Image (cartoon, rainbow, N blue to C red; front, top):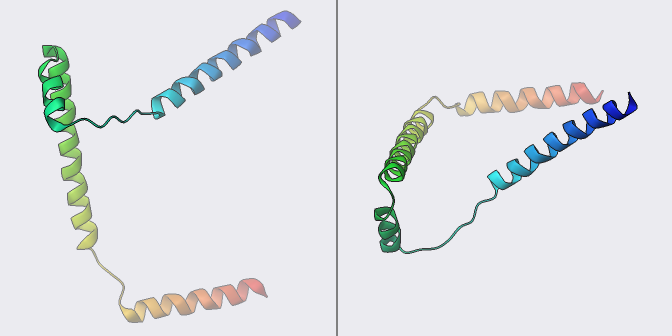
Length: 102
């Protein structure tokens, strides 16, 4: 009975440990500086399947960049507080802080 409990806990620990190690390696990235021409040559040497995957990733990234630009425009063109509203907020904050410290 005790052996089974220890075995179960060991399996849980090993699973957790392995997932942690995989997560750490997933986060770690190596950066290598190569010239653009070298990158093009490497890309040209890829097999057809990997070339398709690379192309899809690059296109997906450009779609994300477009989405970010649209979001940025939305935020920059959105409503803003007037000076009167900002002073009201500051005054309200001041009153709340005084009330909290009593």
